[in-house]
Length: 195
Image (cartoon, rainbow, N blue to C red):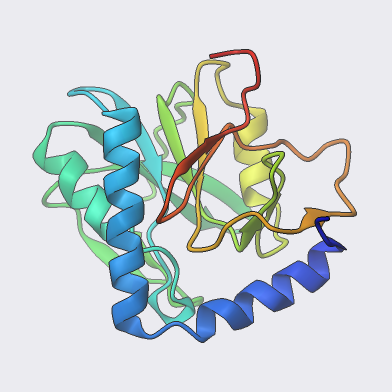
């Protein structure tokens, strides 16, 4: 029987679990997640991937591995940037300049919003994801806003070190679930009957 927990409880629990990982463990798990992602989705040249830049201090999945791979395989890369209270999306290249924002997140210096919504994949940060694709983030709602404007063909993909063992009790009707979750062990699809 799965335990049912509130988002706030899950947020606290998985921040602690992540803190308990050593930097080496986090990197090895990130590499496994990356390999599972590439093996399962096999992104192609010229496809568009929206991917977050990790907050190293919070031991987020090391998506720099993904970004290096995408750029070296001519896969178009877009990253989020917070401007005011809004999330914009910026295409990056090998020579893109970055700076660290007030939250300690590396962001492109440019504010040139791509205004795109036709990504093939959105690699989504999260603290936890349940077996139905419901995610727990940091509670700011930036990705909910991003998902609302997405084209229907976009694959919303969460990445997490941990398996979906608990159920989220307080899912809102406006929460947009993920399509997939990639863990160090496997790729879970939440698109029942659609694949």
